[in-house]
Structures are given as C-alpha cells and as structure tokens.
Image (cartoon, rainbow, N blue to C red; front, side, top):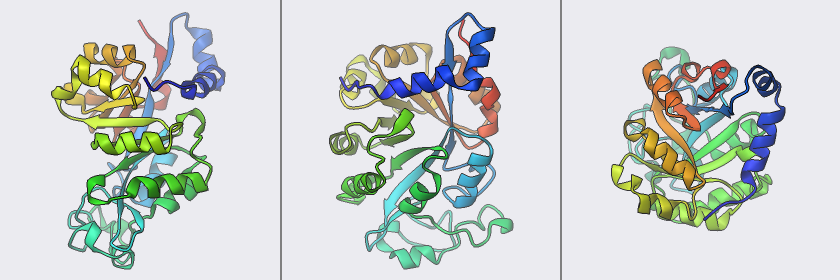
Length: 280
C-alpha cells in the first residue's frame, strides 16, 4: 500500500495554523479540515482554466486550484478541459491537432462574458510559476491516452521546480486513466496520486484495495458518495475528494459525509471559516 510520510506535513500545518489553534481551543472533539478545491479555478465566476479563474480562486482563499493538462500538436503542455477547443474558445478542432501558436491565438474568455474577452489558454509552466507556493495545485491529466509520454513531460516540469517533493501535499496529480496514474506514481513516488471515477463499479472492496496500492486519493463524483464509501476509503489509508459542487446543498451534503476535500466551481460554497469543525 502506498503510504509515506506525506501526511505528516499536513497534520503539522493543521495543528499549528492560527485557525486550527482557535478551533482546538474551543473544541474537545476531533479536529478535521476539508480542503476547498477550485474546479478549473473559480469557474462559477470566471472562464474555466484561465488566469482570471485561478486568480479569483486565490482571492477567494481556496486551498487548491484544479487544472486540466493536455498537449498541443507541437508538444506544449496547455491548460484546457475539453479535448476540443469549440466550447470554451472562439476556435474549433482538437487540442492535439493545433499548434501552441494556434491555441494561444484563441479567445478563451468571451464564452463566459465580454468582460473576459482576450483571456488566453495558459501553459502548464505558467501555472506552476505563478501559483506554486501561493495555493495548492491539483493537476488532472486529461485524456492522457491521447498524448503518449505526457506523464514524463509533467514530471519533468515539476522536477525542474523541485516540486517532486511537495510540502503539505500541495501538489496532487489525478486522472480517470488509472494506468496513467500508476505511471505517475512510478515517476514521482513522493507526489500524491488520485484516481477519478463516477462509476459505482470502482467502489467495491477489491477495487478500492487495488487503488490503494498506488493512490493516495480516491476522488468520486458526489452522486456515488456514501458514509460507507468514505469509511472504506479512509480504512485503506486514502483520502477522498469529491466533485463537482455547483450548489450549497451539494457542498453541505459532502461536509456531512466527512470527505477530505470538496472540488467546486464556487469556492464560497465551501466557506473556509466553516471547514474546520468538531466531528460528532
């Protein structure tokens, strides 16, 4: 089972942070923290996977930004969710078929509102350079099966910045592609790995046990989250981050389920002042 001292920094940070000290003084129960993960940035308020959305997430005091990494035709790692550019830009075509210059020329903001006109598709290295040390980064490899060798490229960018030894789990890598995550675990054994799923078939005891060999996080859609699933995940030494919250009701449900992180388009639905509380 993949268990290291990765959680030690998290525990120490939690115990000695000012907020945690306050709650510890007021509570005799177990102290827990629910991480607030801004999905594609604060994408409820700004165009997803753009600097505007990531800056908004930082302003809203999210614990992490979640980004989607793909690769241009000429090998540049870029941040965009869909495998085609049609929905979120004024262009058309598959990301993998467009050069970085073509991708960079697109307007990636106007779909959200004219005030965001001119927002560009960011690069992976721009995100790392701008935000590491300021906010945690949850890196999703989007359709890595379309981009042979993308795992090595991502690992190299992290190593260049000495981020292959993340402090307090502030770099996490996840994907729906489990083989890709096994590969990432072998390339970056000290970086926490997450597996994404929306399938109940992946919540069996055997499936979860298999994930725990290489993964630190089991990250399901909130529609399949139950108290029993959370307990099973925790019993195997993994954490659980659930997605995608777009309502206060969904956020409150996941808080009640005792998940470790909530991935949301609206960071204010997971109010930082409410994410430390006494467990019953």
